[in-house]
Amino acid sequence: MEKKAKQYRALLPRLSAFERADHEENFTVEFTHDSTSIEGNTLTLIQTKMILTDRIAPAEISLKELDEVRGHASAWAYVKDCVARGIPLSEHIIRDIHERVVPVRGVGGMYRDIPVYMRSARHVPPNPAKVHGEMGNYAYDIEHRIFPDEIEKAAWLHAELVRIHPFQDGNGRTARLAMNYHLMMNGYPPTSIKLKNRERYFAALEAYSPHKEIEPFKILLYQNMNRELDAFLSMYAMHR
Image 1 (cartoon, rainbow, N blue to C red):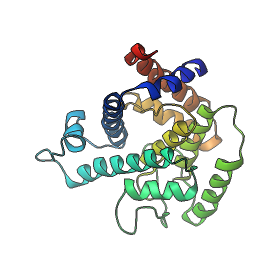
Image 2 (cartoon, helix red, strand yellow):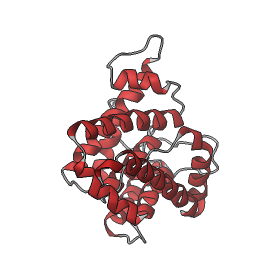
Image 3 (tube, one colour):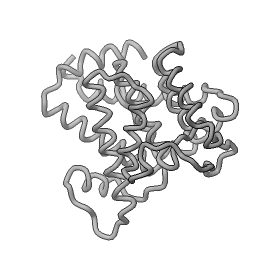
Image 4 (cartoon, rainbow, N blue to C red):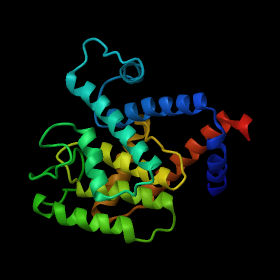
């Protein structure tokens, strides 16, 4: 894995401006489609591309689903900008990401003040009175906790944020963005949890929430990262 990551870091600066833009655009569309679809958005990959690339709103789609796609893309652009400027991931940044994911006044970036329940999950997120304290501990661990490697830390960042479920809505999308924030800050490509892997993904998160067992999600993320690295190195092999 690390050998491939080193090759990725060496190849990335060699891409032409067109190749870089094309690669980023394709990932943005796929990532946005996968991440919103996992949460129940019914727009197709083609419709997502129309919205984000062609700036066309397909006929007969709901405003809610349109806003989910646009909000995710806006949050992803914010993540990339912060990473490019070397801004460390923090509690404040996570709230800013969420504010773009769910751009609803009084909801976006605001911790929930009501109980929530996760669909088809045994885990019940913390009482709203405990959210601020849980997020304070989470922010401390982001900065101070030691992990075996950056992939495992990215897995933990995602799984722990979902366990806390600090927001009324948009927790999964925000967690996947925070995960990629950390990966990119540490020289790895971003990765998208594919819609076809939704059941395995939810099962891995379900394994973490009650007992903080990170292994299933860590394995899934390692496999995802191998896929991303292999695809990138194959696509741009001519630059080696």
